[in-house]
Image (tube, rainbow, N blue to C red; front, top):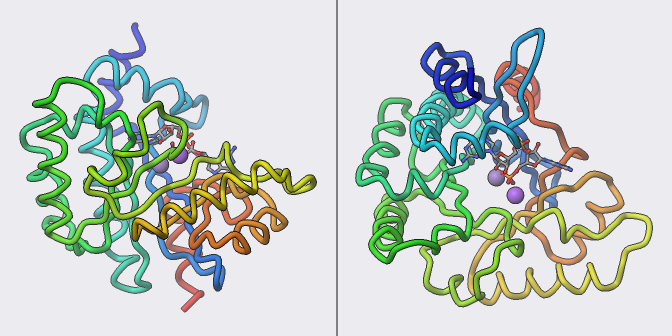
Length: 255
Ligand code: G
Ligand code: G
Ligand code: MN
Ligand code: NA
């Protein structure tokens, strides 16, 4: 069967899962957030999200898949937030933002799970700005409404799109997630890479936006990024994406 049919079937039969990757505060290495990442796997095989997410995007199935991930992640994270203050980040496709009921779907997921709006970040990409004016207006209206309720909005994969920087002032956002392509290589500390990160951090600060750096793989990189003024970091150095029960077990003894 085509991958999209198998994916729809997996979604209907609750055969997808959600993994979580920690985001840490460089100041004290504590977990402040976990990012929800969809997984499609069994004991025998797995399909990479780099394969099935594009298929879901192209078929429109990403709307149902995104809602499923959001609701599952809010349920998992409500207890982590209650007991440890841990926040939740969820990836949102531009297709979800074009649906008339997106803000209502998010509000319902929060209400049903008990996760407070201020504990949720939505990760969107610059592609929100692409497409017909009415779709863009709809997306911005959803984000504005949800931000007014306390939800945090982050630009994911910052610096990899093709938009002009002016969108940073026009989009209702709170945080920039600096793409891992900008992370300086630990050994060389490439001066050009360092200059790029420094400029992005300065830009974010000037606009009153928070920063998260992705793809932190070594302690040497963490040291450089911290020195450059990055606030939060995410990457294999701090932890790979893992199932919910591993997050629960790791958080439990910490506090
Ligand atoms: O999990 P991994 O880091 O391999 O993810 C690969 C890509 O798939 C990333 O771009 C990530 O943002 C995306 N992705 C993973 N889970 C979701 C999801 O639930 N919704 C959307 N829209 N994208 C996701
Ligand atoms: O686009 P988004 O930022 O949502 O993608 C997250 C993706 O990045 C996931 O597929 C996750 O597995 C991957 N990822 C997370 N940390 C690291 C890292 O330190 N190095 C690399 N190469 N990939 C990472
Ligand atoms: Mn992301
Ligand atoms: Na990213």
